[in-house]
Length: 95
Image 1: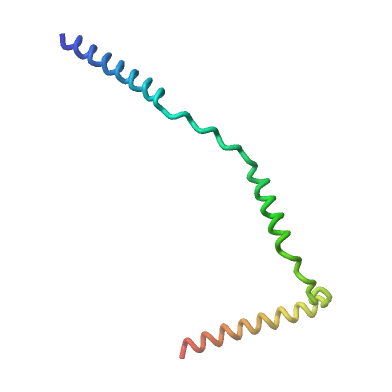
Image 2: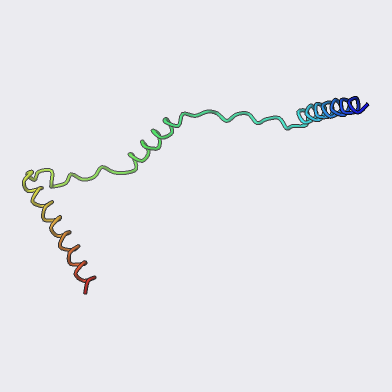
């Protein structure tokens, strides 16, 4: 007798679950149409083109006519100045 009651309760539970699920499907709001799929690469290209149009070309730098040796000399001078600044700040921190 116990087995019969258990089986009937199980079948009643499954039936109730199936009815509930079928009602949920009927009540569920219709799904919204999927948004149009756009190509992300095309969007990025468009943004890049707009940015390029907005930013003017930089003026030609006079360094373009400077020799390679002169450029190297200037770079080394800037590096020496940076090193001197760093060493100077270290000495100020130590005192």
